[in-house]
Length: 86
Image 1: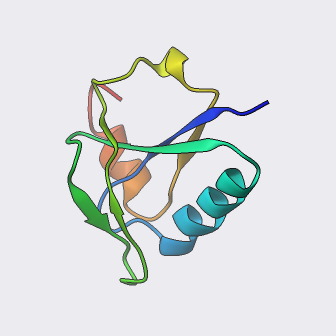
Image 2 (image 1 turned 90 degrees about the vertical axis):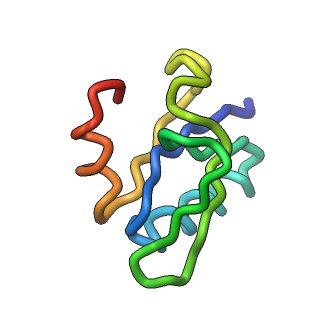
């Protein structure tokens, strides 16, 4: 069964902690949706190996719309933890 997987991500994420799981999820038939405070924004990994255009703003979708959540590492989890909405 295909799921929508939310990825909370922001600048300075650990490149491989997004790219590897996202590729596996997509290969398994799941939809990966990147989320940040602003849709359309481009964020970059700390190593510069990956850049990601944000699909949805954090307020665009309720958490119940997703079957799973991925937090890409490095700066992303800490940055989101400081946001009240998250």
